[in-house]
Amino acid sequence: MNLNLKNKNALVCGSTQGIGKATAILLAEEGANVTLIARNETKLKEVLSILPSNNQHHNYLVADFSKPNQLKDVLESTSLNFHVLINNTGGPAGGPIFNAKIEEFENAFTQHLKCNHILVQSLVPFMKEECFGRIVNVISTSVKQPLDGLGVSNTIRGAVASWSKTMANELGQFGITVNNVLPGATNTERLNEIIKNKANKSGLTVDEVATNMKNSSPAKRFAKPEEIAAAIVFLTSENASFINGINVPVDGGRTKSL
Image (tube, rainbow, N blue to C red; front, side, top):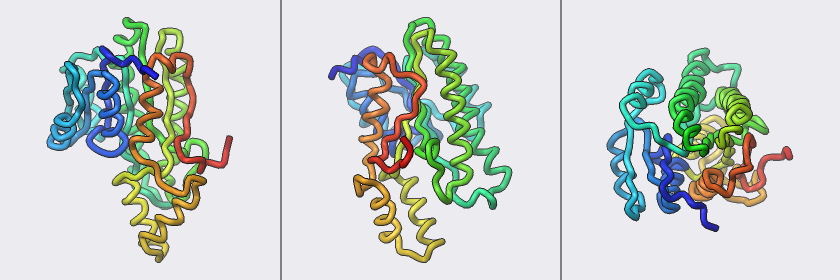
């Protein structure tokens, strides 16, 4: 299948590692001009250097999503002719929701929903001009089934999903789609942190926790970042033009709800 992303410009958030990095590479392989955005310039340069290129123009922006005003300044200083936006930000620290501090909710809301909103408001005018836009938010299966020990994350992910669905309803008439990809347990640094925290609290070994998590999925394994990226990139293509406002679990069948 030809995803027809040649001459499309994509902005990929959190693109120095994990799912964001895999998505940036796959978008580039499919012909898109990719702009990376994250807070670590050294890592951004490393990823930029490995992006496939066939007369494409790749770039990067440095922004810390804990500082939304800085993100605004960065966006104001660059050309915003993007057809594709991948909203992807590392999840909040784990822990029971009852023990969560108010600041944890505020920080997560800022990094996920506020910054997503800033990006959409900045990029949508060009998408409207082009009568083409693809916004994909990388969230979590907790949107459908809250995950134990991830209280703050469950709360904020749900807020982002509702924001996204509302945005999809408003922007669909302009040829712009807004969809959510919900990764299950994926072999990333974030997952390694979750496993270590669970092991410390449960008294189990890291290997035991990892095995239990794998067994919770019919696939009996963790996803590869590239597998999540494949779903994301399909949703950015012309072929996904009539898919709008949905949540797509990519979790090997772990989520129990339909």
